[in-house]
Image (cartoon, rainbow, N blue to C red; front, side, top):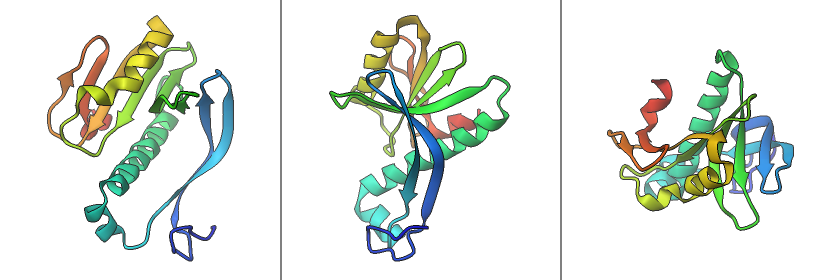
Length: 158
């Protein structure tokens, strides 16, 4: 374990070994990604919504990695960010090259702006882009246009 940069001397956290990332140039990096758990977690979550968002994104990514291990159709997980800082939290890519994009939001009411990265990716990939979802903490699934939907986080188990 490594020491925490947030005052956590033990550096508690989750490690995704060799988590692949995809650059905007089409290349791939393989680096371990360390998701550090902050001190005073409960207090920080209630005081700073970005902490809740970071934890939820980490949880969803780890759950999807777990499910990918036993999936009938193999997929690889990536994070996408290009030079213009457009990003998508999680990409699921099949061997065929088909891609599903996932954004994770800690809020219960997704907005059109939450789909910006997914819309960009849909335009860039064309028919390879099969679907995009914004996972949220609300209760309802809602369509947001061509191949895009807002889905409750519980949808990853459906």
